[in-house]
Image (cartoon, rainbow, N blue to C red; front, top):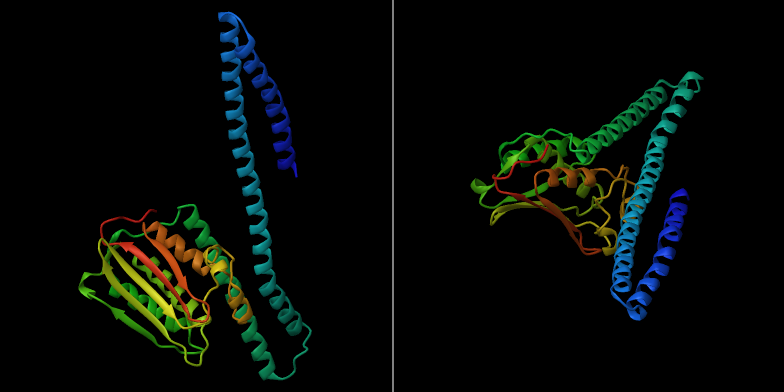
Length: 303
């Protein structure tokens, strides 16, 4: 509200006098006689141009301030919402155990297991928030060594297997021209980014008939890595914002799968730090393909 008032005050204090001065300058140029009238008219119009430029710059700064304020408000609201769910569950489990409501040893063990699960979930959420914050602020330090993509894929598959113990899934891997797939960067960060894409495909693909594919090939001065699934896909109107933090598509929310909406934001940040880009290609009902393009072993990642 204060920023809107500032915009209104800036407009009234700048535009109205400027419009009057422009009119005066035009009258002096059109009706004035002599050199002095022409010079004054030109000076008035020049001053008006400067005022308009100042107004435009001021409006840009005020608008950016409003955007930052909205972003901070939305960010705090989303973080609060994401933290509240596991914290509420933890408090319920603690109260249940404290009040000795469970007499069966099996029920107690189950309650402790669920408590442990929620604590781990909260820890993972906080770790991802900190990691994303470091990536966005460019405080994350990356390795800058030559990395072969086969090693990155091996690490990603190991992390994927660990994350999908409850429902194992097979990933079809196709590395074309495997000897020519080398990038320069951080093996651990790239492996985590690729693992995030695999886990994302696993989460939102029905178990019955699930198919996940990982392809990599040289493409000129770049290397393309694609993770493809046969899930419900992502509607076109959601594709542009799917990489934003805390953003989850309708299919993700309706699937019942837990998620913080940070995985794809982290993937994008890691890829950008390696001077690459990521894009989504998806047709609703026909699955989704996340494609990463990275420079081939020549450009060092930021960090």
